[in-house]
Image (cartoon, rainbow, N blue to C red; front, side, top):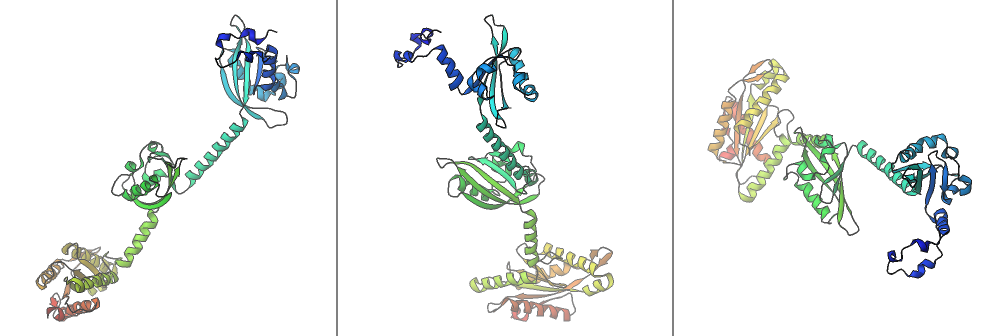
Length: 448
């Protein structure tokens, strides 16, 4: 066999390679040994009957045989039908002139199988006619196992994401959405796929309403925080408000730059509405929706404190409905409740937005005002209330006419406690009752 130095053009050698490299004793025989023992690939040459004409040592070793023992054997002799059914379609494609690349789990003695990536190319004679195929196979088992483990882990994580009650959102460093779980549809009314690649904050809408969330992400992007929590009210596609709680975190790369962020978003609408209702029940009358006695007292104490501090004026109108007991007695408490609600609506229509209108208890109502407080203006307001109540109130089965007796009290400079002003207005209301109902009386202390 000729020495390889005869086959190498000296002019093709790199300038830095000394000509003595050709004295390494390379020959076709030594190249064969390299192919047989040193190459990291499994190599074979087979004819159109799938009989082997050449295999390297690695190929033979996988069958615990020598290359010489394998020459002339058919692939059908070496592999089970299950395996030949799997790979022969690829080999036949090479017999048809195609270069084919694929992966398969190949049998190895003493092993459950090893993953290889395989190239199959046509073997042609000097005329170009296909007479077989050449195969080379590289072991990619460890990489394949790791990729498969990563795929399984990713599938499990995706399953956890999609089965979690929380909405999971992932972003790049510029807050473009890179991943979102299926729950985003119930949160926003938008399918996950169209959101991918879009910037988060414009998707959510109102810049002013989203400012707390934007600030939270800015702190992550600037490295001031690694994680944070914020509550914002979103708007569902159907227009309904969605109260949400966001748990945000940032992931940085080797240089410390934020490369991605993640948010776990909890829909807390039910909880928030319940809390709002509880807070409202603590301060509002459940029947009429007006402030209750406790809330009125708190607001009045604050007003009295302002009165003592800066001399601001305060007035109370205390009114009790006339003939309301007849409504309950003749038509039932359901009708009475409807009448109370109608009275509340009329009071809200007459008073100003800054005034506090309260159902003090039963059929008693109180109006607290700190705007344009004079005895004349308060009497005028009381007269408007009386006129508003002259019209009958409708309820489910009929109509009822109720009036009111009203006591007016202006807060003096010497007041000690809020309850004193309430008592003066209450006393004035009872004076109006005793004077024939449907009247307005001023508290003696306030008028002094």
